[in-house]
Image 1 (spheres, protein in one colour):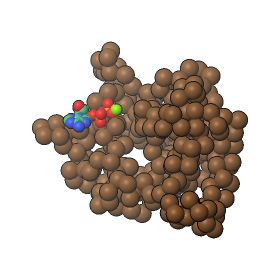
Image 2 (spheres, protein in one colour):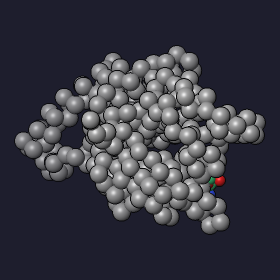
Image 3 (tube, helix red, strand yellow):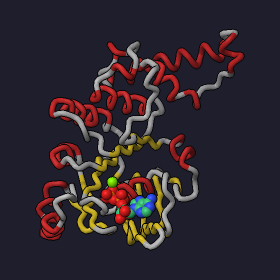
Length: 260
Ligand SMILES: Nc1ncnc2c1ncn2[C@@H]1O[C@H](COP(=O)(O)OP(=O)(O)O)[C@@H](O)[C@H]1O
Ligand SMILES: [Mg+2]
């Protein structure tokens, strides 16, 4: 018998905002190396759960363990430094810098050299830059951005900017990626290409996605957790979950303005 290893283990997660209970006791197990989706109507608690898992929001009660770290006890930057990557719905990048420069800024934190090392081009700086250039070449190739390395981020089409956001994350070799509505606002061709990219990037990594595009969820996810009103109602493969009677009931019961 093989034991499943989990990248994420959370139990009894509750989150209250004043009188509002956004999460009412959620348990989650995300197998290492899998692509896992959080779905459900607006207001279900997906974003709150997502933020709790990547250490941005502290739960009111409950335990959250990601890659063996208790993320409820660590500041968000420390979580980010230890193998947890995250993209934001609004792409976080330096718009007036080039693609290459954005990748450089992404890994400054890991470099050893000081300003003086750089000014005098000392060996510490040269070593850092050699390591960096090799990594950049690799990441740009994976993300299909090699030709665009010297282009300004602001000049890139929206779908390409989203690829750059993934590239920025990959510079720090994350073991788990959290993606908030990764294909929102993309056209059909961009969506298809991005799904392909995530499949490649997901090799040997765990990916957690919040996404309204059910076709993208079906194409990417091994498992989904369906959330309704602060609880997880069903956890299964996308196909089976979307056919589950409780999910259909919740879906039909949702107001027209409550997107999934
Ligand atoms: N910072 C906040 N302050 C107060 N209420 C919040 C806050 N964040 C989320 N909520 C509430 O928690 C519930 C779940 O929200 P959210 O996690 O954003 O759901 P989803 O992402 O599934 O749409 C909603 O009722 C929302 O209004
Ligand atoms: Mg949300």
